[in-house]
Image (cartoon, rainbow, N blue to C red; front, side, top):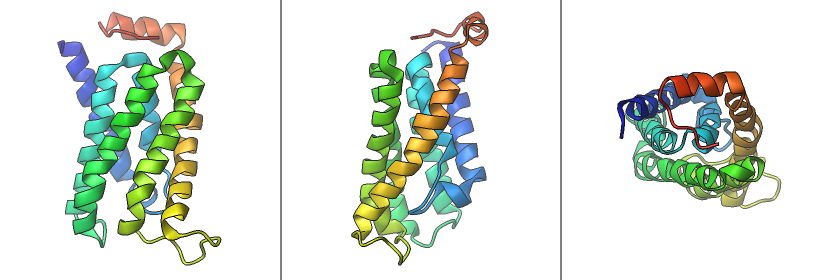
Length: 182
């Protein structure tokens, strides 16, 4: 990996982790809005450095949250969220990279992938509120995380990707020696 790509990877990982931790009250739990997930969409434009960056950033952010005592279910969080959360980001960012020519569809698919993967275990760490609309806990959390991922990836993330695809930003990114895939 070239120096520029390594710098991009580290920058994305750092930004993802910092956003996740700075917004921890809304980044974790059965009802969440992980704003940092909007960075996943940049995988479509900037490729492997972002794929690795959002995966590593998720690992770092989740790990620091649980080891700092930010959750009551530390052991389950360490087992599930620190391993499966980054895996969800890896799958979603690879989807965005693979289907980068159809960015809207890829954003929707990536959001649903995160919703299903993260929602399938998150209910074990953070029980959902008592007022679930007649749904089993696991299904409630899958729906909740899927909806929040649609906001952070398919809405906010798509807007970020659209902004980065503008010609002025494309020229700037290229002048930094970065390879663009869109």
